[in-house]
Amino acid sequence: QVQLVESGGGSVQAGGSLRLSCARSGYTGSSNCMAWFRQAPGKGREAVAAISAGGASSYSADSMKGRFTISQDNAKNAVYLQMDSLKPEDTAMYYCALMSGPFSCGSWQKYDYWGQGTQVTVSS
Image (tube, rainbow, N blue to C red; front, top):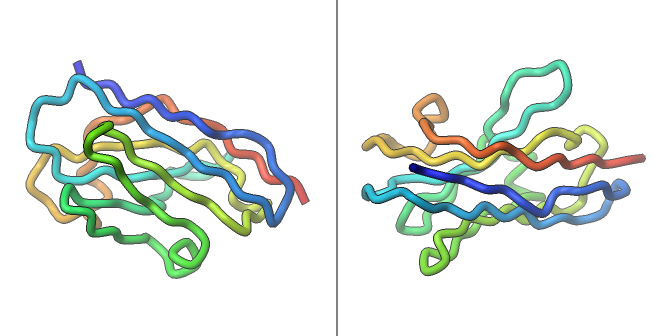
């Protein structure tokens, strides 16, 4: 059974930083992409960033590319999201996701395994 477990969320002041981690287990396929999404209260789920098995990264918006950095440690089956210069509008539940199908990492609708999320709260 595939499990994705996020950690590293918390409460920070605007301008601060957090590093989210996602530990993957139970997946035996040839994983294609891992990604981070977020969902703010009252809003839909939003893609943040993705990374391919080979390490190529992509970001859903230029504003995120400048402040967020996705990385991975294949030996540990882990994916990370370094978030700097955090803003109150970054407040959301952050989810880790895995895409098992043969699609490009920016195919945000194709992610089929999800973690339970970790809460990030940024105060002004």
